[in-house]
Length: 270
Image 1 (cartoon, rainbow, N blue to C red):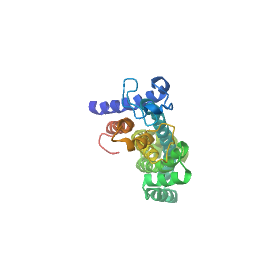
Image 2 (image 1 turned 135 degrees about the vertical axis):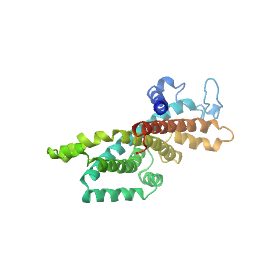
Image 3 (image 1 turned 45 degrees about the horizontal axis):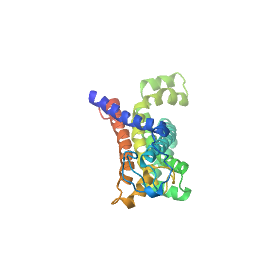
Image 4 (image 1 turned 90 degrees about the vertical axis):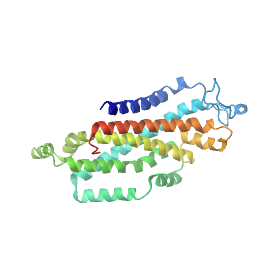
């Protein structure tokens, strides 16, 4: 148990570190992330600019710090929207059953038939690049996993004695779902959300890398990687530092999810 709680603390520490960095970005940034100094383009790391400068002479450390705001904003909003939709539809499907369950699960199957990232790319090609469109595209796909999880958990719980007792007392379906079923799903949902945040972070970086996500001059880690790939041999620091930021944040979410899963479900039932 000590090892499991250590995983949670390690993951939570990494995630909270990025949250603090994003919250106090103007204080931590050594320079304006949008200020260009063309004559100092591709400058290697120095004491004044620990991460160096990009091709336009902008401070990479400042852009990485501000990029954390983009990644966390997309991740939190997308997971919140996806979780809300997934909880609602999954609970409705699992508790009502019958034609409602059949119709909703066939809708889920349709979404699962398409590779998630490819469908997001297709949506972005139609909607156009931009932060709001990234959130919309990822939310449109992200609810499916939560809906399947919640439905399965509801099916396992709705035959329990406390649910039958509430039904015998005349409680309505909405009250039973909200007061008796959903509170018992906090553990599995928290684990799924942790892994979902990691997936959304990677998806946002991938879309921005392809030029379909957040547009310049906004500092997105994915777009910074894309800008640095043509200078890998002469200025690898352009890609190394945003790449490390993506890897570290995703690692933090995954470690947090693993720790929560082990603590909340030691028998591996999730």
